[in-house]
Image (cartoon, rainbow, N blue to C red; front, side, top):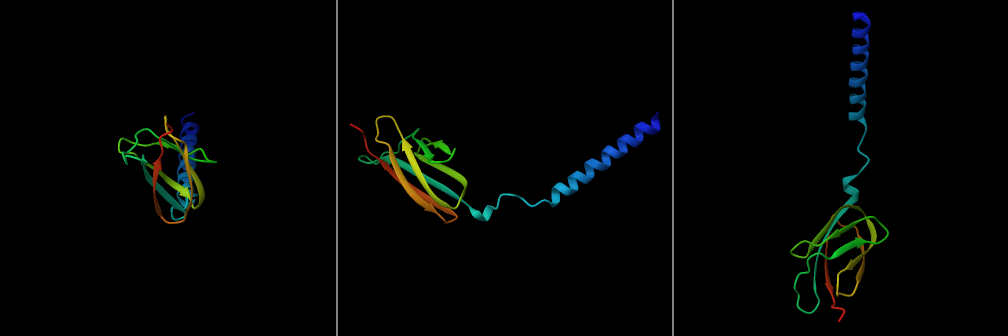
Length: 116
């Protein structure tokens, strides 16, 4: 009985080590060189004051974030290409901007107009 248990344990250990070695040989599926970062800031068009809590989303994707206390936002590891960035904030007009991302990092400054 002990021989059977020892043999099974050795077999499981061998399979685990073999699987770990094969996992290390598989190349990463995400090519970091093909991705870009988008960062930006959002401010009031009239006063220039930073807007906190603005919803920023990339149309046609599941990417969405909110501005921080300084009006800044960022998206990391986006594929290169054309995107439409849409911003939404209470008592402000919805703003959108289409841009082409092809540099490693892109910075965007958005001015939102009050809806009054």
